[in-house]
Length: 170
Image (cartoon, rainbow, N blue to C red; front, side, top):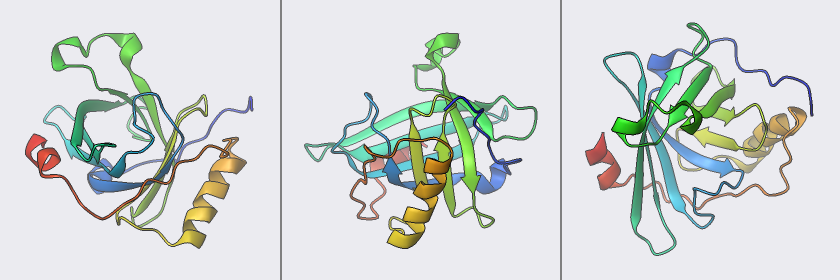
């Protein structure tokens, strides 16, 4: 689809911060397809950037934590961010950043649909570990109307567990 991907008009970062559970995603090479109990936790840094702490249980049941940094790139709207998971000393490298665009967000900041302009990656995030199947389907159908191919979407198992290692990293 060649049409430009649209984001929400504005995101209140203070309301977006906190822990989100991954309900669905498109596959990606750096995330184990069998990972479960996947969470993303966002915290505001002193300089206005967002600390990103992603955690999951891998196929062996081991906790895997990735720390990153996201910065808004859309002049105060906060709907388009660039994120990097490189070690702190290497985060200046520009080609190692990925787009994190908030495509849909409910008024209560309970559900978010996140993607990137190439429509290769997509995440459905929710404040609770489970989401009503009909509501989940409606949010994914919205992604389809944006041009996302959903034939390979992964629905990771969620027990509601937030990993202590991720809590310590925050």
